[in-house]
Length: 425
Ligand SMILES: Cc1cc2nc3c(=O)[nH]c(=O)nc-3n(C[C@H](O)[C@H](O)[C@H](O)COP(=O)(O)OP(=O)(O)OC[C@H]3O[C@@H](n4cnc5c(N)ncnc54)[C@H](O)[C@@H]3O)c2cc1C
Image 1 (cartoon, rainbow, N blue to C red):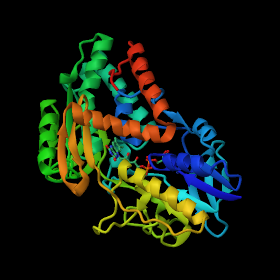
Image 2: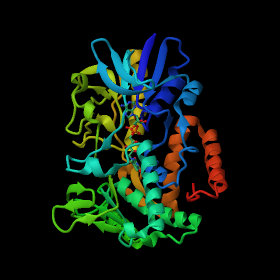
Image 3: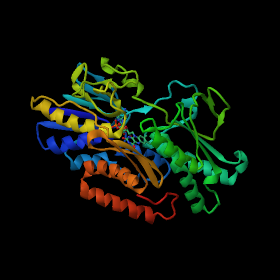
């Protein structure tokens, strides 16, 4: 029996496991196993909503074990640590904290990325990184405890709670724009008069503008939207050090902060660098051929943020959910072709645009056929942004269950009237 192991059940790996399970899982000659360190999946682009309570992780999660049962694959919970290529085994630390090896014929690595502190002193020690659902929940707890602390003992703070977010990419901008509403909701629910005026939020970016993936005009318009929300956007501000009291820029005064968040840059996890002598990039991603197989081992595929897939443009595909989804589709097709001894397809990244959600609105660009760009904003952009999430869900659980999921979310948000969470979706 051929054993296919997929490590990482995120935007790319979970779609791949489900797709392969549906296509090959009933075949007695193939066994598909998904390995993830967590027991459930949350779509990573929504982590800022988990952190600010807009999204309830208990409603919008999908348990891997349940999905495996319905889509003909197996699930093992454990943290991947190494590959033994000679014996074709992956090494994991399972949920009982024991190190075990699992044999594979075909291995897919899809473990995503982590924040990149670029070696900046003090960042690891003093900042929160929005890397996974546990970090998002930890950030939510920290925010809530600071708000509560502020209400009961304002002496501990300057006149406001200062939140500094380093990184003017999608993660930093989307998180910043949700925070004022989280505080307003908190104040309303606790009837304590606390409101967004008591929050001082800064988005700090080293280059001369935020959102480099978007056209300058759109990025400037989003900057204005943030500033209208009372958020400071500090560009050309290179952080050289973080300490307990705040961020230290190369030039200018210390940016004092009570809550420090780092969202600048991504890299694949450090342990992936040259793992099992595979070729890796400067940001630890494993280098793949157009078929998404690693350059040094045809039995190992890599997809998503941890893959370094060079494109005709001379640049690698970006670390986005969009690319992870497209890679999952090609990888599924290539694994089936490999098993059937057929020629494989090449992965070519298609940029369909970028939309940034800004609490109750959104803005960005979509790419039309022929590659022309169209700017979108307001409710239309918001709908497209939400649709992207629902499309990911539909890939996993089907359209009808996605509609039921979406209705269930709405009912749950409305029912939880005592929560601090904004009611949307
Ligand atoms: C706040 C935020 C907003 C974003 N917005 C957008 C957006 O609007 N559009 C867009 O296209 N992209 C966006 N992104 C980027 C997008 O989330 C990622 O590019 C995408 O999730 C990558 O998919 P992946 O499958 O490679 O990894 P992930 O989705 O990160 O999945 C990795 C999986 O691997 C598991 N894992 C990790 N390490 C191990 C291990 N050692 N052992 C076992 N399992 C492991 C994790 O638990 C996880 O399930 C955003 C990211 C963030 C944080």
